[in-house]
Length: 233
Image (cartoon, rainbow, N blue to C red; front, side):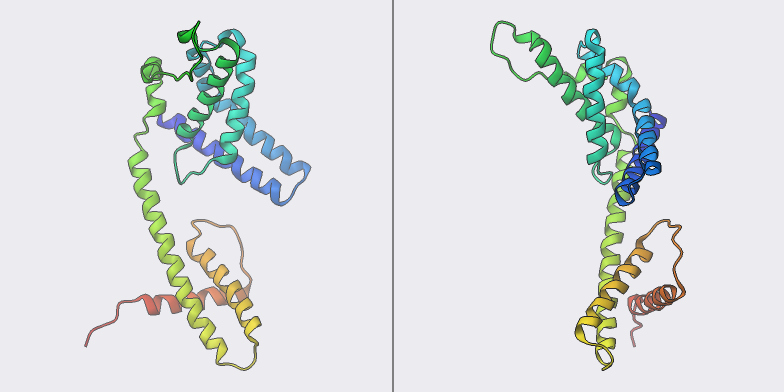
């Protein structure tokens, strides 16, 4: 289960990165990369699509089910927020919603034949059958939640430290008559964005210019100096 979940997580991350690159720089190569990333994601999702298709009794219209599931998968990948849930959990709900809607369109709710239609839901015991329970239960959820909470607190702390540094930087520049207020604000805003990115980035292949490296080194040294606990006398 963990391997399947991790593979899907990697695949959707690759697709999001490819889609973002395509949005920023459209082109045939970027489009091909995005299409291949989505094809890989669809390949990994195929077993659970077949499973849910059977559980909803739609094996006789497997082609239609595959089409609506492709829509659900694409929508899930477009809207996915890794800070809120694992992709396996999020995409399962999207697939179920589309298949449920298809079943209602084609067959109605078989449990209420002859009466008014009501929304059909897939019972929990059906999802737990045939090994599907491991798609609903994520043993890594607690650790992932704690990690994301820690990451969130770290980001908040970084934002505060950089904002405080920007305030000091602005005050220092204001004491010089060489720059107008508008130019000071523009420069501080640019430097603040640069420093925050370098302080919070977990991995980057970006190479900074010498002037940017100087700004970052100077800023981090200032932040460390002011963040250090003060000795009591």
